[in-house]
Amino acid sequence: VGHFLLAAGQAVTDDSSRRLAEANSSQIAALEDQLKSAQAGELEAAKIAQFAAHQDTILRAKAAAAEAAAQQAKEAEAKEQQAEAKLQDEVAADTKAISEAHAQLAALKN
Image (cartoon, rainbow, N blue to C red):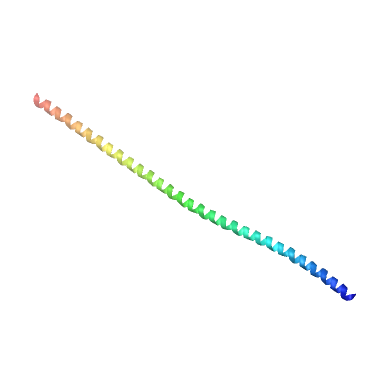
């Protein structure tokens, strides 16, 4: 009888141990799945961050190019205004010279 009770107790203990091991195994599998999911999420976040950094670099380069183009346009406009002012000065000088030549011609005619 003692052996029977001991065997029955051992069977209950073995069954409890088996159930506990199965539960632990399930929990471990669930935790492993969560870990894999978190690692995949971290990888995806790293890829997104890398893409965002790449896009930021592109946008900064485009902004710098646009700023350089705007500066070149300002410089070209300033040069154009200087050339126009110089041309106006030359026209005024030529007009004055023509007027003086006409005055001298008129004086010679008289």
